[in-house]
Length: 172
Image (cartoon, rainbow, N blue to C red):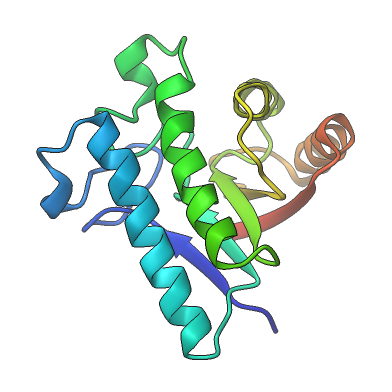
C-alpha cells in the first residue's frame, strides 16, 4: 500500500467552506504564503523521505474548490475570475515536492465529484495556469452530490478531457 500525504495548510479541518491559514501564517501576504507553502511542504516531504516513508502521492490542499489559505488564496477574493494567486501557492507546493522527490505524484483535491461543470472549469483553469498535477482527487458524497450514474459519466468525461488519473479520496 502506498503513502498519500494530504496538506491542509491549516490548524483546523479544511473543506470547501473553510480554508483557514495556519495561525503562524495569519499575517502573511501572498508572497510570504508562497514561501511558507514551499518551506513547510519541503520540510515535511524531506523528513518523510529521511525516515524511509517516501510519499507515493502528495495532496496540495483538501477540497480546494474555492482555493486555500483564505483570503489571499481564495478565488472569491478575485471575483472567481483569477486563478493566478491560487496557482502561485500550488506551484510552490509542487516545486517543494519535486525538489524532494520526482517520483512523488501530485494530487489536487476537489469536492463534488459528479459536478462536471465545476471540474471542467476548475481543472481547466489550473492546467491553463501551468500547475503540474498528476492525479485529480475528488470527494463523493451521494447524499449531497449526485447519483452513481452521474458520477460515472462525469469521471469518464473528465478523465478523457484531461487524460489524468482520478482517485475518489473521500466517500460516504
